[in-house]
Figure: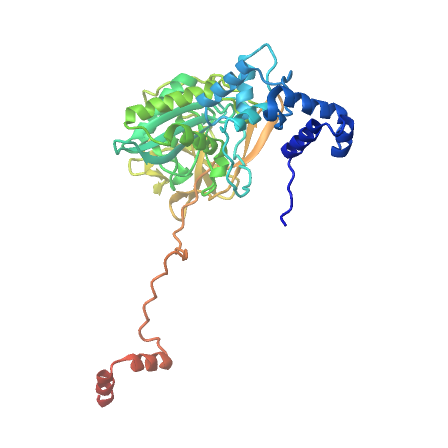
Length: 461
């Protein structure tokens, strides 16, 4: 015999049916069903008013919520979300606080519940924990350090390859340059975009880049034509360590946002792609709250540099001290001293460099203005970079305070070509046998694997 399953609806119907029979009082029925008389009379009242439909279970949610989100505010929150689909509750609340100076605003958790209720939140994928980025340089004011790099290349709808040049102020996170370059990443194209930025924002003190072209080389001081131009302008080039993009973590984080909001998917033509970059740049600088800036915008923290850019028209004549020996580099990258020619770099052709005696050991350091290129090797007759030696960089903060950092300011260590290690994806080809070094066992195994007619011919010979 199957078990009888009682539901709330069936119990209410039984209560009403037995009451209609008139054999039991309401009080007796309430004691039997384990409910109060108030609840019993309420059931009977709903049955008389609505019939069996009145016995259905009803929501216990209150009819009004004094602390709930008002409908106009809900619509405004959803409008901000639809306009910026990648903004979370934090950024939406910060945006509303900036726009509304009066009136109460919902909490961050209330906005999160609203977005979840409207199916506007995706469950995050499980990811492995990674160490936080460790910036190589921490600036304390605008225009102390600018970060520069290329976003990974892609192709627009017309098939042309796009390389995105980005330049950011490290302190305020303001995106100063976001330019789509088509046809290569030459020094001339990068310099043209940087000149526009220098005219608009002035000059920084340091320029932080990676070790790729056209930012760095393996020559003396790691200089290229572009970074040598920085030195002439009074900008000190800084470079991260090879294989450590987290040392330029702020720009790498920008690239993730740039890819999500302005690259995926790419536009149909180069012109439309650049228009999308300009719209993203304006929103990123002036509208989007930045968590690293306490939900402020980069534009609210950035100020123009006091160092104006002046385009050079004549030869560059750096001021060297009396203790330094000044030499001019020839077109082939050599300079002559004591009737001996030394190679420094063809990048510095026609430039004036300085030689400075270091102590009494007969060691000379080589300088381009205030930038050290390396050490003069009298035996090899060339300038060598001291590898990855670091120099203590001091960036003033306020008054007597200062920030001391160990950063690379000398050169780039030449890359050493090593044999590639097997990746496991495809086996390495077998190494060919070395003639004249086989043992007897190898010879016997080779003879056994030969065809029969070849073994007999070998035995006859």
